[in-house]
Image 1: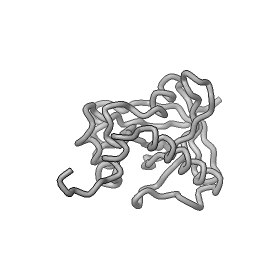
Image 2 (image 1 turned 45 degrees about the vertical axis):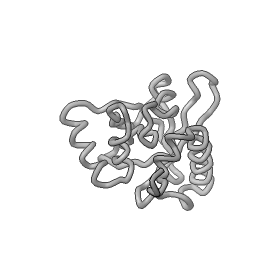
Image 3 (image 1 turned 135 degrees about the vertical axis):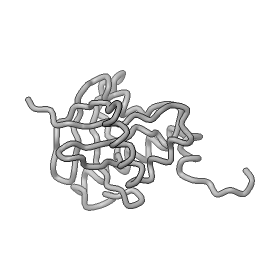
Image 4 (image 1 turned 180 degrees about the vertical axis):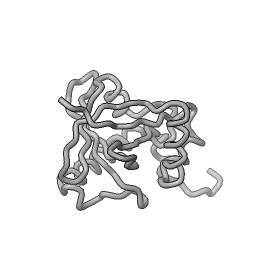
Amino acid sequence: MSGAPLTLGHIARRTPGTTRRLTSVHATVLRRSHGRLADRWFGSRLLVLETVGRRSGLPRSAALVYLPDGDDLVVVPANAGSARPPSWWLNLRAAGEAIAVLGRERRRVRAVEAAGAERERLWRRFEAATPVAHYQRHARRELPVVVLRRAFA
């Protein structure tokens, strides 16, 4: 490298296993502290998304930057700008539902990928409010904008 500082994005793209472990540890701390510790990522709010591994069938947790949009929660599966989508997004698409943990609240959610004008509106909000949006420059894919809506039994 030419003396440029390494960023989390650089590291994450080169060592996806490390990123997975760090996000798992972060999610554990956030969940066990009921949102009192590690609840922000560079100023952005975090939730824990609990999914089921699509191949393993085992429970998985990831700490995600989110934006509230009314009663919905908006997330972007950026994977630090990697060309590959994050495992939590693949697991969520396969299962259709997950649990979003916000502090002490556990909310069953369904994922809906935003499209058209809704995607543009939400992407602009996400880009303005979070550090995650800059990963779009590095990704070799359009980052989806995912709306987590309450799933009622």
